[in-house]
Amino acid sequence: MAAPHGLSPDEYAQWINARIGAEVRARREALGLSAYALGRAGGASDQTILNIERGACLNGSLTGTLARVCVRFGLTLSELIAAAERRG
Image (cartoon, rainbow, N blue to C red; front, side):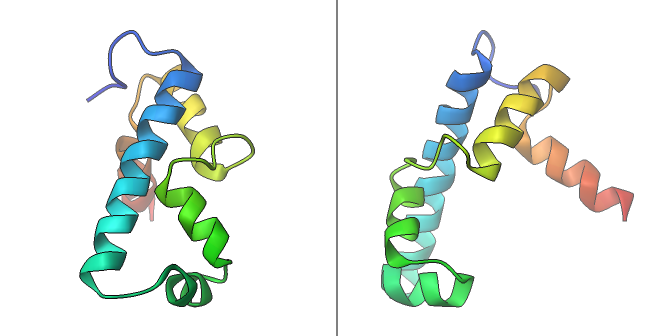
């Protein structure tokens, strides 16, 4: 699966960050964790967790950078990660 058709690198970065953020929030809430508790577990501040959940960590974030690279490769972020995991 390629990046959503017609999206620029920045648009794809925003698209994937929003979806990752929603997934992080859903999983955090399902486990009954506060942003503070999840941040401590992940070595980040609660504000960082909340920014991730809002998709607000675009510029300078690893996800945003990788999303832009993926558009250039014609891949989705999940395809890049899956290929990296297979590489061993």
